[in-house]
Length: 420
Ligand SMILES: [Zn+2]
Image (cartoon, rainbow, N blue to C red; front, side):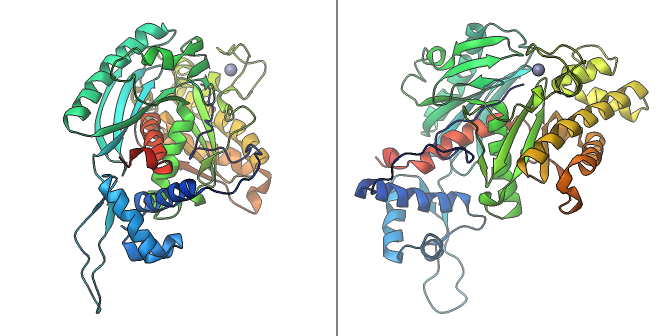
């Protein structure tokens, strides 16, 4: 599976930024910056912010912050909850929360083995979702988008009836997507090339007026993972640095530096599924031979374990637990292949953490130790900074979560259009 990175805020790649001229900020852009800053702190806070804590955190005066908060409340982006208990003299602080269910990001996904729709609100809470599993290998784009649109229409109608504002749609695909546009350039396992996803989605009357964007599945999953890890740890998203590897039918990768995706010249970095493990190895769907995907992708794992096509990872793991040698060997060899490919990446990127997602999170107990052993052996810096291999915490269908989050993040980054 292939991967890419979009260029819009706040998913701006950190490795390469455009070198535009620096211009003085206009008053309106300064106001939007401050609104976004305040909203970002409210949305990302582990412990709910009060106006006083916000003023301290963002470095603005209390009246200025209060004015910004009032505007966010009036726009239904933020709500106040019950005042905190007062331990000392003074007015109680009023915790501020992202408004539940008022603004919603809709993530759509076309994957090799499922299509789905997931809606999250500003706080990242699941509002509704519909996921249909199936086999979409070598699928015809129009028919698959038609099915996806029918799911999406149901979800949007449900959101409309609950008076939620749908802030936009982001579509996750397992392929190279065109930065800033709607083209799916290449999705080897779907056998898609140059598919204009946005043009197809715009046929839906419900989506015609909404912002639509397209993103790579592994990038979107890594975005969900970075957010979930920072929330779970109570730390800052900026502290997140890891190589994300998602094992599906294809294998997606993404590089997270300082909580942001690291891009590349064209936004197409992270293609670890097509890193070579053995040039004499099996033919890959990308046209090369011996790619990681041919050793550690879902289909390859099942094939190498001698099991029938379509065998689930749950069943594969059951065979391993039952002492099936072929199944255990297939998983171990997949772990070795993931370890080899990711050791090269870690040596190149100076990262010390690999996060295994998708089916690899499900297989972590049997796969993780092998990956860790190979990395400890092959990463030069491991003798000084131990390598960590961790299971993803972002849950099932993380690309869908990341897609919905991306829409929500756009509201947080550019709140002005939603102020009414
Ligand atoms: Zn390949």
